[in-house]
Structure formats: C-alpha cells, structure tokens
View 1 (cartoon, rainbow, N blue to C red):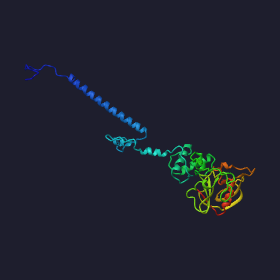
View 2: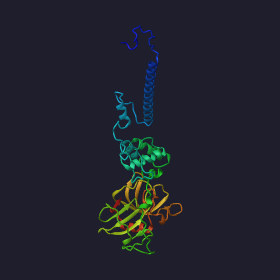
View 3: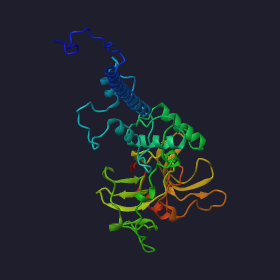
View 4: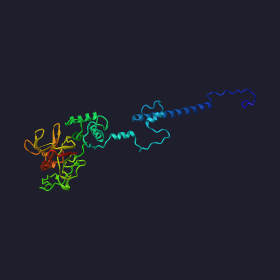
Length: 348
C-alpha cells in the first residue's frame, strides 16, 4: 500500500518545488563550503606572496627553478622543506662568512710596504683603508692589482707624496694603517757622562754597552758587521767573534728607500753635502746606491746657511731623514773608526 495514498485515490498534493526547504538547506551548506574554501585559498596565496616578496626584498630569491616548482623556489630561499629540522644558528652561513672576510679591524695595520703582485692580509688592510678614504671603489680582494695600484697613485698625487703606486710608509701613514713605530723602539738608560766603550770611544746619550744592549735581530748575519734594524731605528756594531761592541739609536728614512739585505760599505767622506745642497753631512759612510743618491750613516746634519743642527739627540729613534741614518756625533765618530770600506752592513 502506498503510504501517501492510503485510500487508493489519486494523490492530489502538489509536487515539491525545487526551491523547497530541503533544497535551500543544501544550497546554504554548499555556499558555506565554497566560501570557506575560497578564504583558505586566498589566505594561502597572500601568505605565499608575502613570503616571496620579503625574501626577494632581502635579495635571497631568484626566479625559482627551471620547472617553476614550489620545491625549486623553496631551495632558492634556503627555507627547510616540510618535515625538515630547522638548522642551528651556530652553523656558519657561507655568505655571512664571505662578508665577514671583507671586514677587518678598524685599526688594522700593514707590516711592510706592499705593491703590485702582493697578496694577503696587508693588502686587504690597505684596500679597506683606501675604500674608507674614497680612493678605491671596489671590493676587498687581498690582491694588489691594477685597481689598487691606481687608487694608491691617486692618494699619492692628492696628498703630495712620492707617486709610484706602491704603498710604503708614507702612503700607509696617510690612510692610518702604518703601525705605531715607537712601539718597536727600545730606549736604554743614558750612560753616565764621559762613559766609553771597550775601544775607548765616548758614548752618546742614546748608545749602550754590555748588558744594556738590546738583543740582535734574528737573521742579521754573521761575523764582523754593522746591523741596522729599520723598525727599531737601532744599529749594532758586531765584532768578528760575534759579540756586540756597541749599540745606538739613529734617525732613519721617512720613505721606503732603505733596502733590506746585505750590503757593503763602498765609499766614505769626512764631510759631504745633501742632494739638495742645503745640509752638511759629517762623517758620511755609504753602503747603498739609489737612482737619486747614496744612502749611508753620518752624523746629525747641519744647515748650510747657519751651521745649526737639523735635530737633537733626543729625537734620535724617530724617522726624519730622506734616506740616510743620522747618528749622534759620538756614535758617528765611533762608526767612522769601526766601518772602513768593505765592511758588511746588514739592513733588516
């Protein structure tokens, strides 16, 4: 029996319309699902765009993988894939390490002059200083190439230094990367007035004998010789048996023309004149020839016009000359007796 027509009569109730209560209920549910899905999708898109924009702004993302896949993009950003452990911050980022290598201590110094073909920390320190001073527009490479050479030339031209593209003492001083020279200078107690050495020669206020003599520099030769240490502005007179007869401070060159190595005294003059004709150089002992003149040991120079000294004994131990090593007059008199033509001179 038909439950809707229990009397056997035709069913005269109107058919259910499509817009009835059940159908409307289904439409509401379907619409809610669609809205939820749309909101979820929109949020995902916005998040993805935000991450990408932030990463691109940081300069860390390229155009993605060749297939445009999400995996390729994730690899570009360096973000760990789903399920991977987040890397510890203690692990060095190679890119950060490169940046760190570009930066040296603000007070870095160079140990020796550097020039074309040189590499290493001294060159990097110089390049950092040139960039800071506005003479070099580039990266710190540690290689003294054409760009660094041109930058040093510009520095020398602008600051009225000798122009050769080589960063020596004057150029390094100009950009504050030359070490404090006085840290290498050893000043011994002044001897009593009238004190003499083992040869009976009078000592100056900056000379020393016996236990007061600072140690000889390493690799400064053997046998009878004169040793000159540029960093410490000091000279040692060494006897044939290796003991030091006497040591004293000098005033050396402001420039990089004192050539390290083993030389030989080749000429001497009781009195000479400086290359510019303005100074008298007493007891000149020459051991090195250069393109513009000779370098050697002599007493404190005197002004030609009035005979006044160029400096005092107290100023010995500082670089002030144009090439030679100036000595207190008692030390110049000693060396005149000690270093005849043919004497070995070791410059370190």
